[in-house]
Length: 365
Image (cartoon, rainbow, N blue to C red; front, side, top):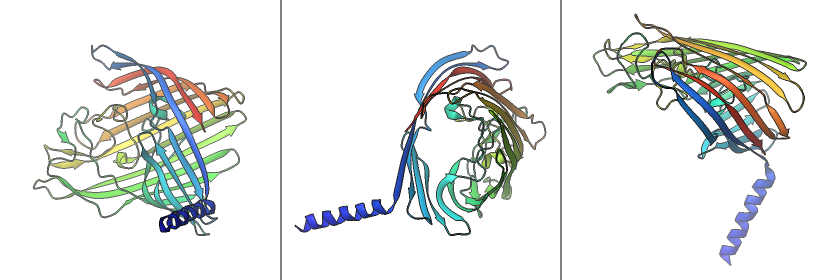
């Protein structure tokens, strides 16, 4: 009898909690079907051709939760039961305070490129701060956040220098005294938007040698904008900074598409010859245009480019470009197929150039 009373009380408590909060569940199932032709630049190696079909890792299921006008939250899981979003937010009147994992202020969007799991030119021209643990304050169109720091180094060989490098070199240690800081401000009108983004981070690294500890400082600055005129929408952005790969995605050599990656991903690197940490400069930009014919058909084109150059004698810049054309088709409310053709060109000898075509299939529920 006592167990029954306890069970009834527990159910009543759960029902009361569920009734007090408003839960709005949602989901998105996404499948990519692509044919790719990969060439190794300026070599005699044969090209690699593959057909792929897979559930995209950014397929998701989640819910937006409203407890009251002041208190809300959200969770979102991706495939493989990975947490994409998990946060609570408090509206305290003058602004909002968020604690958890969410998109950071250095987060931008616009190009709808679907290849490589809806890459959207991320790291190939588009600034993307990803979803990270953070404490964020929002005042209208202004956001500022203390974000989990990123203390990684790059790997591989610096293009053109022949210098040895190592990933978090053996015996090296890092000391972090401050979180990463990010901020953004958006100006918006009826048919246009301009957004400024900024990020800063610093930490110390001791390479395990007689060399004293060295500072690794990163910063990012950028501006994003778009405008809609009738059925047309145009957008563009530019971003850059020093060691920017510790704050936003940068990929000029395949580190986003190949397991392990390699050098020149926009992060500092440790030179084992001189026992020093070498900084780099990053610049990337992208532009896109979309024409919506009707509720069913649209056409979009996009172009992005990125460049990394290390502050060391003899190193050459590492560059890449990506471009695409797609024709989004809405088959029914929430049902989409998006055919796309494009190129991802990492430009330098020994790196790859991929030509692809195929489609993304998506059902939102």
